[in-house]
Length: 171
Image (cartoon, rainbow, N blue to C red):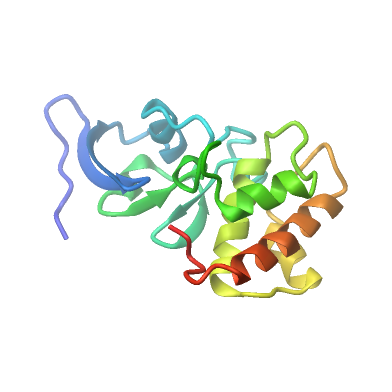
């Protein structure tokens, strides 16, 4: 692993993969991963609490869900990161994204990117989670619009959709 060094301007050069694209950027030691992701044009990752409590900024880094608002951007060095934009888009949505829409789990949309990323993390590990497990995984994602019933139903629907796909990891 390479040693990250500070340049004359006080920045660090890091390299990482974001949504299957290679990046090499200079970051400030105080810059958060959320700031970096958004600066690179990926606006689906939302800023909510800035304390890691709401889950709106959840991403997948090296196959693990993390909240990007509290992680220094330096942590991205050498990592592979997936944001909501890396799953699918309007013309080719990921089955999890489709399930959230079909279940009516998308209201204002602010918390949904984090919930979908957390759902992907869950379903990559547990093919058919029970309701208690789903609630446990979604516990770190706050929604101010609903009672979470539709989101839980969306995870169940996504699980069902993914069973019909040979490669469960989709992308």
